[in-house]
Length: 148
Length: 212
Image (cartoon, rainbow over all chains, first blue to last red; front, side, top):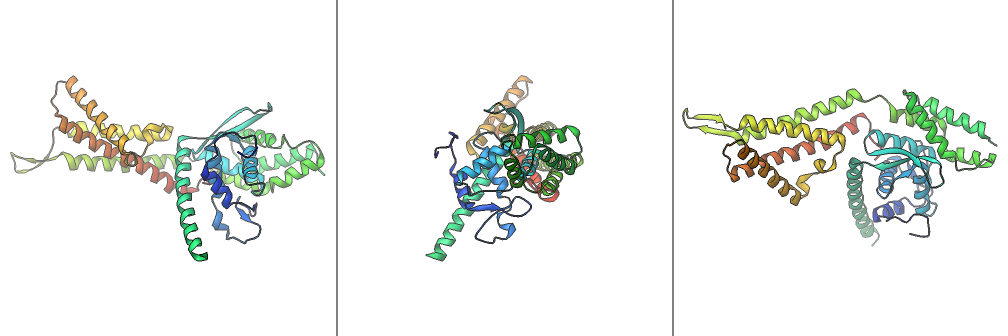
């Protein structure tokens, strides 16, 4: 860990995801992060918010604001999205049975709604991680060849 | 500049325009949003910045409305019915395929003597797996075909249960037949879990997906 308050294991998957999403800022209506310097098609990164949530929650339970802060901190403040978009995503995933939520007090004594993965969510996170690694390796190979 | 009243109006707007039907869920959303803004501080600048970072209340409310749309009861019922029908059909076909025998008396084909018991056990297994999937009972939801050791252990465990059951009821069953029958049941098991997973994905695609 790089000096932050988080002391839990940080998965390479989360790191690679955040690395790809590095230098991103939120653009658009549906929580799709996009690079400031490159105009992506919106479809290009659709779904990454969900993958990011699954990835971070696979390490420990977090509340919405904490997820945002954690993503921002790990990407050296480069990953920024409109904060409100995290809640529809969390609620949708909770209703899909991927997450479960429970109110409990945080370290500072304030009640927070903590989200954690269900067994189904863990399977989904695992599946997404494998897909991500496969796509990432393929893209690296293609881009490497193209630039090599 | 913004003050606490502006923030309250902001949260009210998100909650109201999300059109969430159940009062309890609306209040839970309000509480969650209030906790989101609890740490930002009380200065007008901090509140204004926090609301700016949060995004448009209309857009967030619209996304929340989509996330909470419908109770999904009919949809879930349809999904479970489809899974039970498909898994039941697979179980029936597999049991038919393994229980068909040449009838030595009439020179035709007939079902083996254990077919009724096999199909009853398979049906019970399918229902048990669907319930386990819905209740998220992890050990029963595993894709056995991807875990060979667990698959072999499951076949062995089921065979042992069959042998014990037959021994308790004083009926004969060879170990070879017990293993064959439990292999069929494990095939039904893997098919049912695969059907459950694929149906979940199909419904997510058709009726609105989780963000992941």
